[in-house]
Amino acid sequence: ADYFMAIFVTMCSGMMFLSAAHFFFRVPKTRFVGITIENRVRNTHKNWLEHPIRSAIKTAVFLAFILLSYYYCNDILLSSSIGCVGGILTCLLSESLILISCKKKKKKSETQQAASTKKGASKLLWRGDIDWCEF
Image 1 (cartoon, helix red, strand yellow):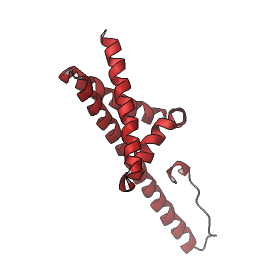
Image 2 (tube, one colour):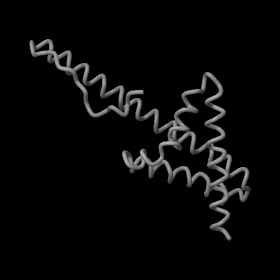
Image 3 (tube, helix red, strand yellow):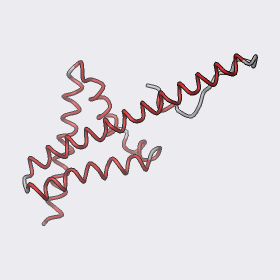
């Protein structure tokens, strides 16, 4: 019976997660948050293929929020809400870390390109392996 309750609570939290994404998308100032959350859900297969470790960590944290809050509160609505908020925060934290990493790589490449042109080398276009950073 506990397994079915865990599955039910996780499903409720997932529905709340998508509802929150839809809400954030509708508000102009938080549109990026809604797009980010919805893309994580819609592109699940692609995300797991391209970034399996990151996806596993996000999923584990999301499920930990849900199950631990249900364990301590024993309330379906509260644990679904906590799981939803935890999932959103995890998703946004992951995206912000990716953006920071991309900015650092881009700045490093610009510095390297500027140094190579100062030395009289031909001007090369740096393409790097961060195409997933470009929006």
